[in-house]
Length: 219
Ligand SMILES: [Ca+2]
Ligand SMILES: [Ca+2]
Image (cartoon, rainbow, N blue to C red; front, side, top):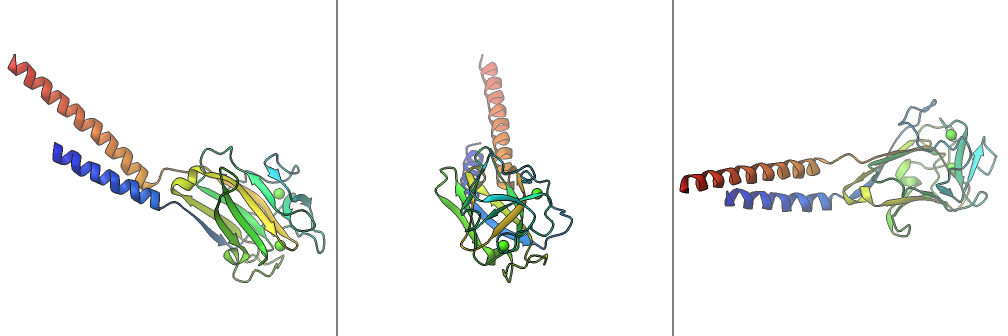
């Protein structure tokens, strides 16, 4: 029994380290579609700016030289830049855990910057530019490639430490719509830890039963 417990403890320690090391925020993107065909949006900007948004501007339709409605976007969209205000901050601290954030990144420009902030709203957990969302971030307003569906995949401890998204743009503009927030689902390492935990309970119950039997014989 002692050997088994030692082996299980070592396994738990290894898993603990692995799960800590896997904390990361990765950006991937797929070509946009019109009509939109991504995850159900949490923020559509269709009734103006949500309470969580600070800075930037919610616009309906495109204004030449200022902001362009993203390909696949309907109704209102959120835009950040010198004309509409930069940065724009979307506070996400009300979400207990976040495993994935997706959104339409409209007319991707090389001067767009997306930062993921921690719960303190100061620490930058991850930072991306238009180059991370499109091969040639030239602001094209109708190409699916420069109007992609962007996915932030969040793993490890970062899932419980997201405070906000901060969008900035040194020129007009950084436009987004249909921001979808998905709660974190337990990772394989977490499931393994839980199963090992159940194993411990089972082992200790069996051990206790054995001791009780021995005591009965001794009497
Ligand atoms: Ca919208
Ligand atoms: Ca743009």
